[in-house]
Image 1 (cartoon, rainbow, N blue to C red):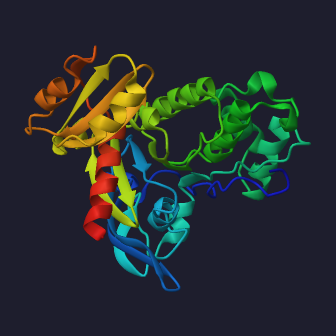
Image 2 (cartoon, rainbow, N blue to C red):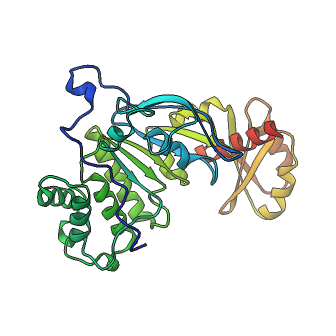
Length: 332
């Protein structure tokens, strides 16, 4: 990853703060876009995406590979121009004020870019030089302290673990004190402990009023977001809090626990009302539409088989799999 150039941090703000805040007006949402479309050749990648992210909110953007997440993020912050649609980012028009947006946004891509033969401090100082930041030393010191990197400031970047490299990338994005962070699958390939620490940092930033739009594949990370949106084949399927999204799908989930689940699973998959069967250790999790007597169906099916059926909470992962399958059935 070395030699790819600095992380895509925005240029420093010239005066700080969104325009409306300086004028004493109501602060606009961090992101407020409507009916965005984007086509590359004959392929329409984004199909009518509308999204609103409030200030100080961590908004999770989920979807399978190739669903249009990264393109949508770039449209929302003015890095790409939509073919149709409109909206604002930090109060700036995404069609006509893209350069102004970039001065207030930090963008962290899937692949962190840094120079492995430079120290952490040297990497950050170089980035500050590129963006012509005033008082570089103070900005770098603040970024180091804010993300717990000060003690490692003189360590070569190539010697860092994935988690510390991730912190360096985030520090680079935070150098110019952005009002909005756009994070494109930032924890891919990072160990669970580093992922947890990274999310603690994000919540600390949100508590300071910084908004975060983060794309992720990890369901445990989705549950850490204030709100979520799920995109599939370029279309936004649903958005809201995790609890609201789960409740809106009217699913119920049961745990079937017993011996020889390898034999039970194929039989349960064929039962009426069953949509999904997944193995979890020595148990099966079975999901289906609520109100269709799934619990009685399962209880009758495993009677005399030494298995027990118990209701459990439907997870956000269960819901997204259900929505993906439903959307693709409808498309077919």
